[in-house]
Structures are given as structure tokens and as C-alpha cells.
Image 1 (spheres, rainbow, N blue to C red):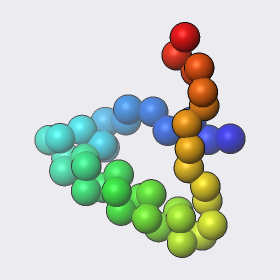
Image 2 (image 1 turned 180 degrees about the vertical axis):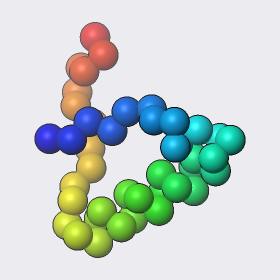
Image 3 (image 1 turned 45 degrees about the vertical axis):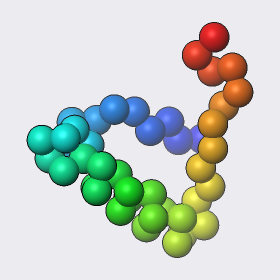
Image 4 (image 1 turned 60 degrees about the vertical axis):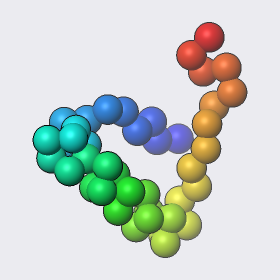
Length: 42
């Protein structure tokens, strides 16, 4: 399990949305799976 946190490189000042989208796309091409953990923040 990898927990993707709010990191400095993904902030708006660093074009964060594009960088995060690109990272997720690249990881999916390597067969990484993404999902949510139900009840994580309860």
C-alpha cells in the first residue's frame, strides 16, 4: 500500500494538478491500482 499525501510538488504553485495527473497516469501504465480506503478518516 502506498499512501499519497499532499506533497509540496503537488501544490498549485508548482502546477500540482497536472503533475499529479501525470504521475497517476504513468503509474497506471505500470499496473498500479488506485482506490480509497472506506472509513479511513472516521
